[in-house]
Image (cartoon, rainbow, N blue to C red):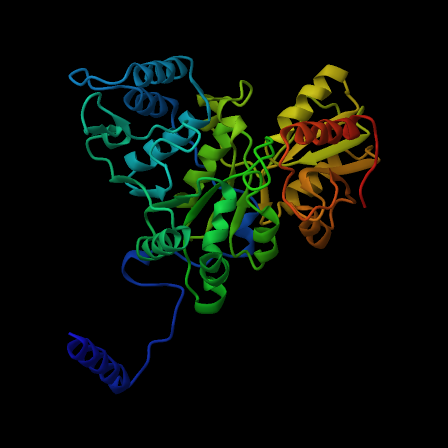
Length: 433
């Protein structure tokens, strides 16, 4: 066997050496890549329209909220699907519904989806339930396989505990299948460190090194909910440190609708870029983290979400943040009736939404304080990246103190730190430099 294998390798090498002309490596790959192009800077000024008609959303929602009548499911599963039906009837979406509607709409439009990771069928935080079990049997039911008779294929797999192997495989799959939405989800965002070689050697740099595009999506649960030092941070700073030359997209969405549009945008652009999603944990069931079908039926991904309640004439402080901490700030703003403060969400960190930031500066021209608020310690998160790249706004920063560890291991200490963080915004306690 060894001799046969070496002979095969030698034959391939001899064939390669005998080629008279070598094809130049091109970003415009043939075959499945035909019709796609390399991106340019203007592609990132504004996201494309990724809306879906409300009638289609309702149809998809109805189908993924239905269970076959001839099969017996667990009572908890039945309750879950009844909750989904209620959301559809109210034309609303929580995080799970927004995500599933994105998949369902892409499947209906002919885009295959491949999804792997640890516990992705159910979801680490029990929100997705893309696959459910029939009671007293090994039979499974996958609602997203029943969106439309002519739909594309949907494949979802719980993977083994080897992030390096699985992400490497999915990267290769995405390279060979650019018209499929290929997703890898870490059980917690920090688990991506087991696949750091794939991220460094391929995801962040392959287009620059080898003219090879790739549209893989990474879902990395991230957010400071007091779950210990490890499972708080997906290491945003590491990804932002790798960002240059529009090599990938880094987002931290705060609404189901924006996540919906981010996923659809991946397939609607005429090029492919890796998408790194810092996905939530507590927002999966946050009562205010709800979108309407109307928000998914209009427009596209919003790189920045402005404060709709703020009067520019009254605003003297603008606080820009990213991720779930927005809802904690919003609660305190409403409690204090702090109308002089505008809360703005930066949903996309890279490519930096320069034009949207410039528009903010023009709108809030009376503001004297521009604050970047982050949950992460000041030596982590987005702060160093913003200092390096953001020339549009003279940011000051509120963050946790420098730390060697991503978060404290004590829930009590975490709650104290988080409370202090929020208070500093409203008590004008500035600020780490």
